[in-house]
Length: 287
Image 1 (cartoon, helix red, strand yellow):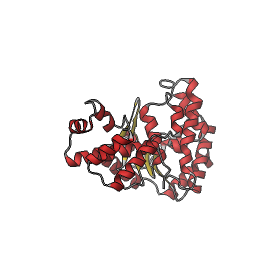
Image 2 (tube, one colour):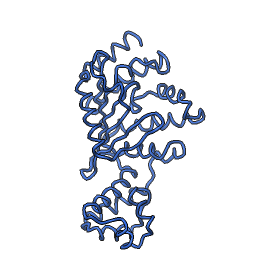
Image 3 (spheres, one colour):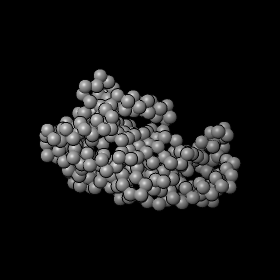
Image 4 (cartoon, one colour):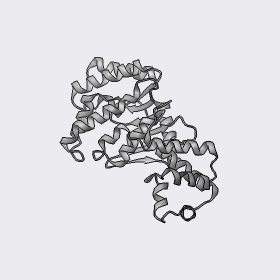
């Protein structure tokens, strides 16, 4: 079971109440009137921007017809939502959307990732991450670099422990050859990658789409992640990343499209064993 994340708990609370409201055909104004909310307050609750006090939450759950067990479950979710995750230490450094991603990532059971020219953040060495972050001077001040590197390494803790995150990755061969940080940094990064893949065979599935592939989709593909959660009541989430704009994706049609693209790229990639062999060969020959 993935660790408890306040961000996931908060999202579950808003998602399940919103879903029940829609299933019953109840409108926001009807809820606001019944629970004596101001017209502007309920939309903030529905968008996960406010957490109701416990008495008001129970009143809402009863109004929406939740059973006693469901009510107890959601009251507990409210309690968990009030806690603070490690990412709260970095408020002001990252956008609200990025902080939400860290919280969702922490509470996810499985993540599938596509990267075209970079090693995914969850598998980066400190030096590789620093080279990337230091080079992003258009958006990041130099004084922030160390904190951002620390946050990236903190995210990686989900890959180990009693219940590690399952990680499925597809990268272009370009990610293995792009001289990020120079030959030494890249070489150490690839050796780290080999070590992580070998030591976490049951939880890390790393595939490379080679230059010889005729599939061109990954070249025009933005970075994206697909996040799945252990609780069956929660849907899959997506994360889309393009220059100057990142967003969590809840629209299920967009997520289905991401899933189709990921499956296609994974199918066209080298096997896990052949991907590992290619990385090892690049290290042996020198980057």
